[in-house]
Length: 360
Image 1 (cartoon, rainbow, N blue to C red):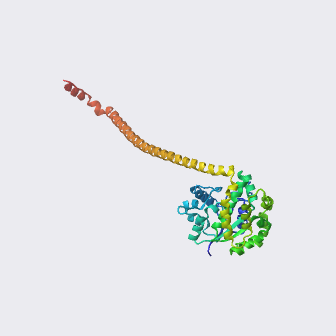
Image 2: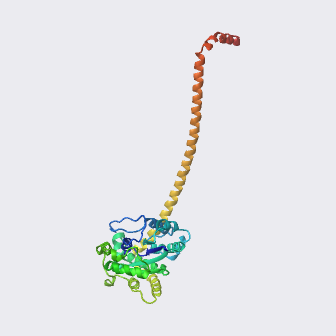
Image 3: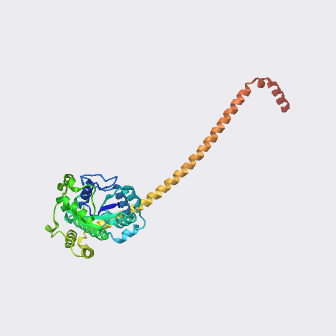
């Protein structure tokens, strides 16, 4: 059976963890080492730590981060041919028929994963969870102290990039709200539209699924359409396009992608500007610190090598000294034995006679 990866390609705080956790209840494999639950995600993130670390490395090489408001296609090209995920994917998922990959950072690094899945001949299915952008922005404001403008702009970037990158894949948009309201209907739709069959039948595990998707864990419930004065029109358009795709949806998203960049000045405030400035200042400082640390590590390594050489020389000298001490000790013992021997005592007059004539 050909391996199948269900990639959850979505924005932070958009129900990605809820969906991944639900699929794991149906025996879709999530990996051997998962990020631990905390107060911000009480039931767990269902995020593979190995891939999280790889994604962080990739973003670092791109001189980017998960909240980079200036992400573009050029950044991914920096690492496109210099980073290989094959070993990590094979080590974690080699024996799983169905497995999940979930990490919001995947939206920014998707081309690398698409490339490795093609190489490994793994069938890729994409689910793009969609949550009301105002709810996402409110959640990010609480968790990360972002302004609402920054939160909504990030949401827009993530949704549009996820849509753009996944066009060649078998994919589905899934509303977080509907997943909570009717999980079995959503799971049935996933199986039908993605042409997959979960290892466990959702109907047989209805109680577990409904219990896991506790609506009370959704702390922010607010519709952007009820807050028209606070939400730019472009955000509403993107949300409507993602939740009600009609006609030529790709053309619609292309137009929205262009419109977002044309109107992005609407989002600019001190928070966004400071994020851009502080990111590159921090990156520069980090690069300088890394170079300084490398120089110090090289200096320490040289000193350690010099010390090793000195220790070896000292060891040799100590060995020579020990050998000489032993020789002196043996000579002293021989002299002592000789001076107390009978032959030495008997020849004493003869030695005196010889010395006398030498003096004469």
